Structure formats: structure tokens, C-alpha cells
Length: 185
Length: 185
DNA sequence: GAGATCATGTAACTAGTTACATGATTTT
DNA sequence: AAAATCATGTAACTAGTTACATGATCTC
Image (tube, rainbow over all chains, first blue to last red; front, side, top):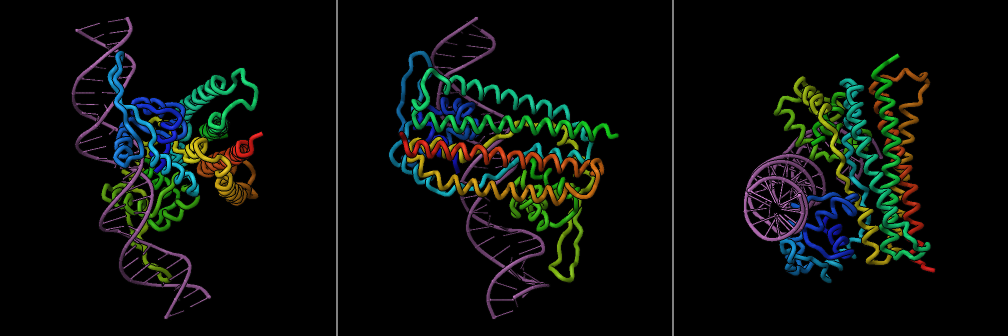
């Protein structure tokens, strides 16, 4: 279960409330580990009970009060232990691949519009990643001035960018194949 | 919930027992939708109860008897309905990306060996995909002789191959980054 | 005053994982 | 006789999704 660990990493990078974590999971860390606010609040409560994280009530003038969480020593130890565990192969769940194979028993051309929409969503995501890269990793600094945390965030982001580019190319291949099957010679 | 639909597709491609389905989910369709035999038996029971699939007891001489499942009309209708639903964006869960960001709070170089092992697993997977492609899609047939089902299976496999190649390249980038951070100038 | 954003939760349900269990048949 | 493969399942637990619920504060 890596949601615990994803939250711990996010809180180590910067302490924050459940609400703030939920927003980070809509971008940044959430690009590689999805979670909703319901999940996050539940896990925060459990980790607080286990002493992995500390809470601090923060009164705010301009907004509702919040609870600010930060990582306690046992949480940090748990993260380190997890980091040294073997990396399990990811269990893939690729719904579009199943749909493409299902299309053999229906009209392949009928999928074209949905795949086009799906392709646009990935193109948007690539645009967002590239904007994030420009914003965070091409400042005026000379190479070598980034700290380890930034270097590691950057290599993860480069992975996201490579994934989106590969996906867009593959979706073009899918669309060409579907169109070809839809209008047979 | 696409496990239902993945099973329906697999049974349309070829009727079979729960055991046989479990083996197909270890390869072929399972490359894009993972499932264990426990999950499969549970879903088969439910779909049978709903009339989506038919069962036939098959006595076998050389092995234990089995139940052969095949898709019934309501199951096929359910699959078609699902196929016409909008494609939801995939929810990503990329544990390695979380670990890489976590490495900023530990020793980045300590991850190197695990990433190397992970890279080998992906290299093996690519080898298997390429072997499957050679076996199933480069026969003596002239282009255009494959049926729609085969063409669609091939484009899905090409996606898997593209994914593995992209992943291997990215893992090289990750390894270079980790090594650089482990031995700072 | 209405709608947006900030903030935190509960409840019910669905899906996925892990551990356990049994028995037939085949091969060594 | 033991180990491997074929075959089917149950039970308990963990994780994830969907729907519902409440209230503060801010902006228009």
C-alpha cells in the first residue's frame, strides 16, 4: 500500500492539511499516484493514530481553520523501511487495450471518436507536464545547482513526459488501424 | 469495472474454464489487465448468475473435469454497451515514481540496485512481447490477410512494446540521475 | 444573497489481495 | 511415493470508489 508512503513523501516535501494534500494529488504527486480526498482523510487519521504523523491546529483569519500534518520520526522510519523493500512489478490495468480487443466483436470504427477524445486528454496532459518542466526546471540556474529533491522530481517528470509522448504516438497507430478496419478495401 | 469485460472478451475469443482464463491472464490479455484466479472465479460465478455467460460441464479423460464458460447473448449485449461508454482517463499508480521522490529523504544511490532489477524485469517483458509478435504476427501471410481481431490484438501488442521500450530508456535516465546524486562532484 | 473555494468528514459499496483449502490426474 | 499440474473454490482483509453531508469564509 503506497498511498501512505506517497502522503509521507508529500508531507516531507511540505507539511500541509488534508485539503492541501488532496490538491497536490490533483497535480504534482498525483500525476503518478491518484487519490481522492476521502482516501486521504482516512489514511491521515490512521497514520495519526499510529503516531506516524503529527497534527497541529492552525487558526486562519481569512479562511476556515485547518489541521496541519507533518511527518513524525516513526513515519519517517516507516518510509525508509518501505524504500528498501523490493520494487514489485506494477499491476497494469489498461482499459483502452481491453476495449480495443473488444472492438473486434463490434464495429471498430465506432471507437474512433472516443479514442480521439482520449488522445486529446493525453495531449493536454503533455502540455501541462511541459509547462511544469519549464516553470520548475529551466530557471536561470546553471546545471548542477538543483538539489537532490529537485533532480529526482525532474527525472520523474521526464518519465511522465516520455510516457505521454509514447502514448500519443501509439494512439495515432491505434486510430490508423481502426480507420483501416472500418473501411476495408 | 472492466474485469467483467476483459473476461467476456477473452471468452469471445475462445471459450474456456476459470483455470484456463487464469492462465490467459498470466500472459496475453493479462499484459493489459491483471487478475488472479480468485478474482476470476468470483466474477465468473456472478456473471453466470446474471445470465451473461453459459456453463457446460466437460468431462476429461486425461485431466480433472472442468466447466467451460461461453458468452451468452446478455453478456454480449453488456459488452457492447460498455464499449460505447466514454473512455475514462486511467488512474495511474506508479510506485517507482513515489520511491524515486522518497529517495530525496534517504540515500539516492541505495535505490540503484533495485532499479537495475526492475529494469531487467522490463527487459524480459519486452523480450516476451517481441517473441509473441514474431510468433503471431509475422507469419508467411501477405499484409492484409489478418482478420480484424488479429489486427487489433497486434496494435495492442505494439502499444505494450512501445511502453516497454520507453520505460527502458527512462530507467536508464533514472539510473544515471541516481548515480550522479550518489557521487556528487 | 448566491456561488465559489476552503475545509473535514461518514457510510455504503465495489474491487483487489492474501491466505487457506481440497481433490483429481500425470509425471518422475 | 512425491512432486507437478490441472481444477475449483472460501474467508478475511485491505484498498478504492461513489454518494452524501456539513459548515466556514470570500467574492461578486
